[in-house]
Structure formats: structure tokens, C-alpha cells
Length: 305
Image (cartoon, rainbow, N blue to C red):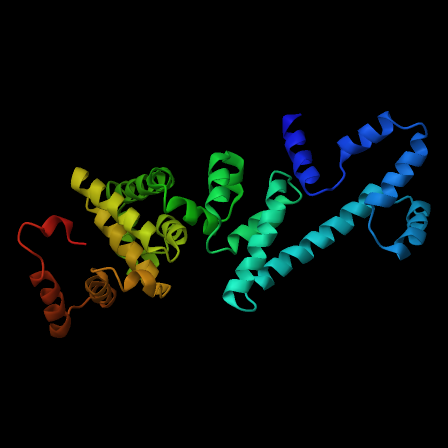
């Protein structure tokens, strides 16, 4: 089919023979068996000592496909390990240059299921995947789905609408969860709403997913805050404010200073978090909180942070 053709085209670009080439060879040759043998020699594992060992596999009834598949899987594992190692060794420019070269060579095979994990692994370790490659990934639903969150962040930061599509269901889920508990007739369910410590509460699925989607990316964090602010001003639903605070403190727990240091609400939220955790506000903290609130300009109260 067409998918198969695209995969084969990728191999051709790299000068690797494929099924189509074999078909052509067999169509135009006079001695098919000789042609097949020649094709096997040219495209098999290039290890002289292997040729004499292969007949032993035949004696054991092990198909060549099975043998080649196991060699291939083993090599792919080694390559994945090597890519992860390259991403950590040597000078920064050099290691990324190596990975970029590898991406350039392998990207044409990204649609091939057996090679795809390697291409995805290379992209995951590149802090800046070339724009052209990101566009190709974004345009293909399956590739987009298969790529790591590190690559998706690079796509999202310049595509607010796409990021919004990913975040929106999570925000809906969060509000629903809160309201289902608050409107419940079951007293133990209600007790569970107020009793967990703030740290336990922010282990919730939505907060954790958003934390992972944002990583250390200030731009994505700002986008999420923008969504929350818009939704809060539209609905006046205070759960959006709770989510904003929980998200910030979740990043604080992970010590992501890149974001915490630039969020104007960080110290205020941190202080409040400690008061809730200890179920007590001492004079020093009360003065601290008051100091933050005194800094809010008249008329701007509803969108602090």
C-alpha cells in the first residue's frame, strides 16, 4: 500500500535495498536462485565469520527471519542506549551536533514501526528539534501521538490552540471532580474534600498531568495560567484559582526554580500553603500575607497573578 511505499522510499534514500529492489532483480534475471543468494550476501549481516555459522541455525530449524529479527532488536536496544548516553557526554554543542546528524539520517524512516523508537528517542534528547521536523510531526496524527512529551512541549510552545486542545479536557475534569465531591450527599466524601493536606491534594491526576506537560517551560506555564484566568473571569468558579495554586506548588515541590522564581504569586502561595498545612496562622505569617495583599492595586483584585 501507500504506507509501505513511503517506508521503502526512506530506505532507498539511505541506499538500503528493500523488497521492491528484490522484486525488480527477480523480474529481470535469468537465474532466480543465484540472484537471491547474491541479494542475501549483499544485504545480510556484514560479518565474514557469520557466513559459516548460519548453516547451524538451519540445522536447528531456526528461520533466517527469526535470526535477523533478534539481531535487529538487539542492535536497536544498543542504539537506544547509545543515543541516551550521547545526550549526556562531551561538550554541549558536540553532543547535540551528533544527535542532529543522526536525526537527519534516520528521520526518513520515522514511519517504519521498527525504527520509529530510535528516531523518537533522538528527538526527545534534542532541546531544539529543527523546525521543519516539528512541523512534519505535528502534521501527522500518529507521529504526534508517538512523540515524547519533551518534543510535544517544543510544538506546543508555538501552537497555543493545539496546547489548548490538550489542556482543556484536563481543566474540565478537575472542575467536575471538585463539584462532584462538594455536591455529594455522602458526608465521608465531603470530609475527604477538606481533610487531605495540600501536598496530598496536589498529587491528583490533573495537577500531575499538567505539571508533566509544562516541565520547566515558562511559556507553557504562562499559557495554562492564561487559560485559567480567562475561565475564572468568565465563570467566577473558584476551583480554577485552587488549581492555579496547586499547580504552582506542585512545581515548587519539584524545585522547578525556572518557573517558581518568575511567578509573582509564588511566595504568597507558599506562605499560605504552610498555614493550611499547619492549620495555624502565626503573627509573622499573617504580616507576610498582609504585605502581599497590600501590594494589590485597587480594581485589579480579581486577576492577581
